[in-house]
Every structure is written in C-alpha cells, then in structure tokens.
Length: 91
DNA sequence: TATCTGACGATAG
DNA sequence: CCTATCGCCAGAT
Image (cartoon, rainbow, N blue to C red; front, top):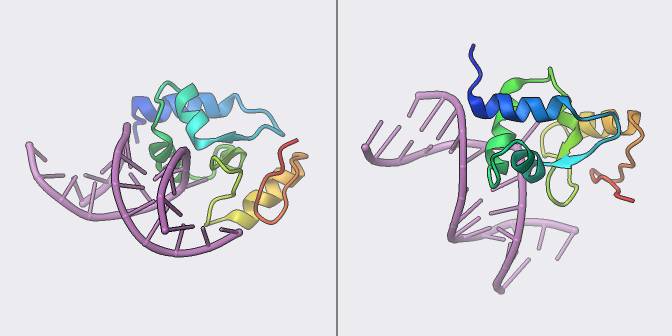
C-alpha cells in the first residue's frame, strides 16, 4: 500500500509529536503544508490505523473524536494531558 | 469525469 | 450546550 504525498506529509508531522503534545486537525494540516485540509487529515488518520499517535490530535475545540473518545482520553491522560469529560484542558 | 464520504471548522439559531 | 448548515479538502467508488 503506497501512501500519497498528503498522507506522508501528515504522517511526517505526526511522528514529530511528543508525549503530552496536543494539536488540532487544522494545525496538523497546516503544519503539514495543506492548510484547510483538516477534514482530509481526519480521514487519513483513520486510514492509517492505530500505528501512530492519533490520540494527540483533537478538534479545534479540544473535543475528542466521537469514536474512540474513551481510548483517546485514556492515552492522553497517560501522557500527562489533562482531560475532563472528553475534552482536553489547555493550560 | 462525476459523486459521495467523513477522526473537520466556523457560524447561526 | 446542542443541533443544523455550509464551506473546505483529499480519498474512494
């Protein structure tokens, strides 16, 4: 399975995330070189599966995604990120 | 080439 | 705080 340029760009940026980091889909898209492609980023993360730190990506409001929010909250907390009621608490 | 899809975002009600 | 819409983008059919 070959990754498209877009997917590689997203992946490349995602790999640089550190434990405790939290970025939004929009930011990831922009930092990957595809501003405005937040939605496409979400699709990409889903397609990539769970082989990458997808849990460090949340929506613009710090809300966890409507699928594995429990799993995501669990992983975030494990990295020291404050999470309350499916929401990341920014300091 | 035409449409549909969705781990998004911003706005309006 | 919630749902409804519209605009956006890349991928899949």
